[in-house]
Image (cartoon, rainbow, N blue to C red):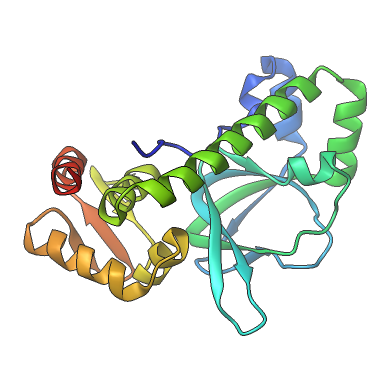
Length: 224
């Protein structure tokens, strides 16, 4: 079975209330537009981000322009802290907003000072890194052993955001293809079947899933 929520939540939520309030008080909040690059590839990392609304996708590019989505980080999650802990201030991937996104930035100096003043935070960061490693292993296993339609259904379940009572995904079919390591045509065949079955609704720049239980049941049944 595909594992839900491949990325752990915010380690800031695990801190005591006073310290968590201090950390978030030091963050610089900003709203980004759809497609805006938060962290350009090969530029120094500015600090740790916490996503409050929307999502970002981490993309690796090949020399010939092909791209692969390595991860999607949604609201309630953080990024870049493991890079700073490993003393690697530059990442070779682009971080791009999916839909309108609001995020807070804790600058590098503040993050490093926080870790020095509160060494107990290292335990939270180590747990986060371990969870990410497990999630990566699980995704590799699932990509090798499970059918594409079931993986796609669980990807949709994982990254959907509720908007006015409806589950919406602001991803293109190319995005899902890049996340799954397959062609767009393979994704399109599945999505068209689900649309014909009334399991999803395609809109401009988004996909609506009225009933996830029905979609998952359909994908599981087809995968048996």
